[in-house]
Amino acid sequence: MELKVFDNYHLLSHAAATRIVGQIRKKPDALLCFASGDTPKLAYQLAAEMVKSEQVDVTQCYFIGLDEWLGITPDNTGSCHYFLQRYLIQPMNIPAARVHLFNATLEDEEAECTKMDRLIAERGGIDLAIVGVGMNGHIGFNEPGTSTQTLAHVISLDEITKQVGQKYFTETTAVNKGITVGLKQLLHAKELLLMANGLKKAGVMKRVVEGEASKHFPASLIRQHQNGTVMIDSEAASELETQYQ
Ligand code: F6R
Image 1 (tube, helix red, strand yellow):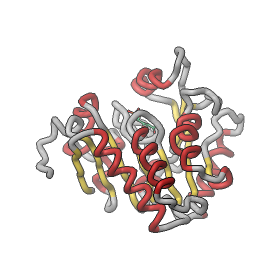
Image 2 (cartoon, protein in one colour; image 1 turned 180 degrees about the horizontal axis):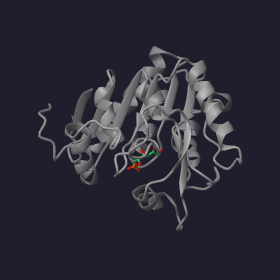
Image 3 (tube, helix red, strand yellow; image 1 turned 45 degrees about the horizontal axis):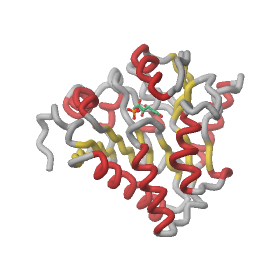
Image 4 (cartoon, protein in one colour; image 1 turned 180 degrees about the vertical axis):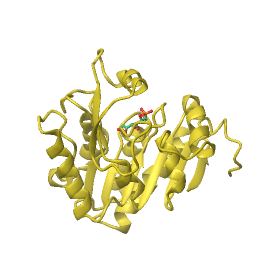
């Protein structure tokens, strides 16, 4: 795992955006997996600007959404679907046929998981996954304790995730379960990029980088990933003892 610390959120976001666009240039038919949430928002906006200004061909890529709140409709502004459409897919003008986001309103949740698993397997795995980290160490909705062997699955959300998740919704919304790409698929991604920013993530990042690498704090497993990169700003790095440049 490589650790990169940036002076501020803008520089961190610019570096992540460059990585996303670089991946598309390197492998035009790459399978890219994207988290939603506050952390990657600016990176996606900057990546979309780069794609436009540099006229990068994105028509051959496959875009998948990392996760979704179960039962939340795509038009809900708090849904991962809405976020990814608004900040990434529409600004980049990705053809709909190349986008696969979990539909978390279908009764047959297993079929949704199977569809995602099949797409990832058919493409030979994820080429680049961009993930954030939850206050409980989750990546995607792989909550603490999730097996490292999981493929896409439905999961009961941790209390912390339910509470913190309210920030995405305009009104109090009951979210009890999530659907997510599994830890196995993320840990086998050819490149795994974890982003975090702000003082509120400092304690979390200390555990990710310097705590025990364990499924009980899933993001810490990135340390076992050969092509894992942790990109954080100086605030999120403020509790680290590890030396970095
Ligand atoms: C969202 C997701 C979550 C978030 C994490 C951090 O699709 O997968 O794991 O990445 O909860 O959220 P923010 O970035 O809002 O702090």
